Image (cartoon, rainbow, N blue to C red; front, side, top):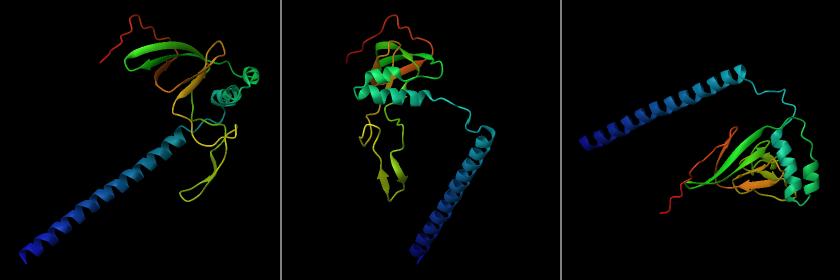
Length: 173
């Protein structure tokens, strides 16, 4: 009987303690939602952006990677493109750097949604502008100041100032 009482007491303790954890988790979730609402109200999404460099890159890339480079070069940018600098890194080695005309974009950014409806039970997949389905490899792309297209799937540093490496080090194990 003592053993049974001990097991029951142990189970009740576990239930009470896990209930406290559950309540704390639920309260934390509520607090997070509340602060998010406050921040969204104080710092709303801008509604006055009238040109997207991301979409500009995506349109230009769609032409470029489908062999229509003249159309890619003819895409008009309505804003002054910033100049940035990307340094490509492999392990502890700096491979090269490029001056970026505009911005670096994700290879997994698209001009249109990937589905008409997205729920856990149904998804009507849509093709991308080139008629393909699926995801791209994780990585980035950009156009340099000479109009050349680049993709990179490794580690990189992007900045509005150039990175100068006087003596790069190659570590070989």
